[in-house]
Image 1: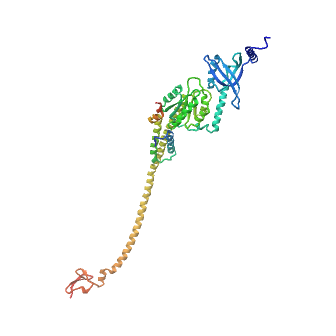
Image 2: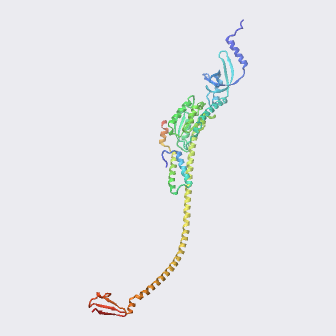
Length: 411
Length: 66
């Protein structure tokens, strides 16, 4: 009989029909992407895989297809929502139908994707990296660095052609306060699979010249849909965390922090915002300087005022002090003169008394009294003669009596 | 005094100290003038850092771009 076997096509057609009948629904399925390719007609072909959670061996695998009309919308939607390229290695939640084609076999046709799932998975991975850095004790090292009061010498890690780099430089240069900034570009790829390696190399270059810089700015931005997965790697995060200068990130995205944002000293959204941050910092510091200047002038003025009023007070006290002193002196003078008078008259009386005593004594021995008693004084040439042996014959002597003198000659 | 090698941060902390000394009457009036001169020179140093491009720094930092 002609029906006890089937052709391959018939068999496959049977499988096709069975699958279509038994699995007519659309299914939300979670899997990892692998071997993602898109061809010139815009269709995307890929492999869905599932690994053993303990090891890394595959436990399931299926071919997948995203037709161009779906892929055209799905890819940008996914990438804009997640900041993650639609590429191999990421976990996705997709809505699929199960197909079986007689020639091409089993495959899953993707109709829709839920970016929230991938975001969750990425967040989990980022969390994992942060947890590891925390365990190693380096998580907050960059945040603990002190941002200089004036971050003026800036190492910029960016793609040289990025619009964001131009915005950053312009914003810095045209700052309204006319603060001076110095920048040097350390070029790096900010998109694609080499982001991690490229930024690490740039960081190494900055590190070699770190004495010449105050701060590092990592910026990207503008342009195409972003693939931020390069900023979510452990190695880059570990490098940034332990970098000796404060890092400012402005990598231009709307979604939650990348790992590098969480590690950096300061994160802002865009390159322009990074420049604004630096200008504001300089503005704050200029404000502090002004306050210091003002408060110094104030306190010096106050200090001088105090000294002046002290001087004035002292000056004011001098006249009244002097007057008091003068008055004291005024009273002292009559007192003194009274004391002087008393002392003088006492002294005079004493002296008088003594003089009278002397006079009395003297009068008893005075020559007049002696002469009166009958003695006489013999003089030769006006000098008193007391020794007769000294007289020669014929010399003239004068004898003074109480009354009158007698002249005689020696015999 | 403001020396060439000091950082802006160092200059500011010196300035703050001087102001504090003046405010807390720690300074002799005799020394006030000297301290004011020092403060003045620190302020000019800081202002210069903020507003005037230093060719030497420019050369070191930006040199390789040009």
